[in-house]
Length: 215
View 1 (cartoon, one colour):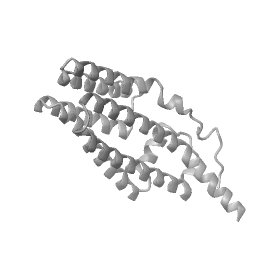
View 2 (cartoon, helix red, strand yellow):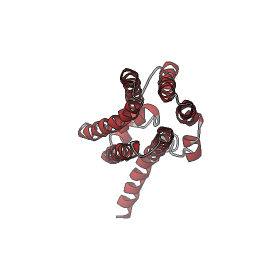
View 3 (cartoon, rainbow, N blue to C red):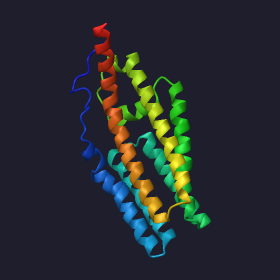
View 4 (cartoon, helix red, strand yellow):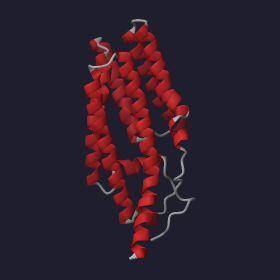
């Protein structure tokens, strides 16, 4: 089996840089500030609309800049639009908070469903966005494929847990607290899992290789 080299896969991302970076400020902190500010001013619906428009514009600007968008961003953007339109039509701010719960449930189904294909969804997204220039010999290694299956299960499980927590907290927190908690935790958990996705495949392969040599 061909060994992984530092040049083929970057597996040493800084956790602080991954979590508390410009993207976190733009994607999480700014929409929280927008929503909480308007919610405190008794303009909850306006706050939701403006924060939703901000989030959608962030996804759109990323697509315009990179000329490509991964499946997760596309999924999130679609549900952000659905949540925004539904909120405006129903004139009910809670509709916007229900949409992410449905999104998590559907994403979990998509992740688990992708396990039946040669390349799971997480592998496709990671190789498209975060891990590039992986040699074909490594990509075709059964252990490499197995690592991504494990990570896909982890992503699916995360979405199930997030959906349950969101559903439980929705009626037990103020809208400002719920929005801040939901947005912050979602961004941090996604960032941590992305780091795990970058580091785990190489560790898994090296662990298997070491174990084989020892035997």
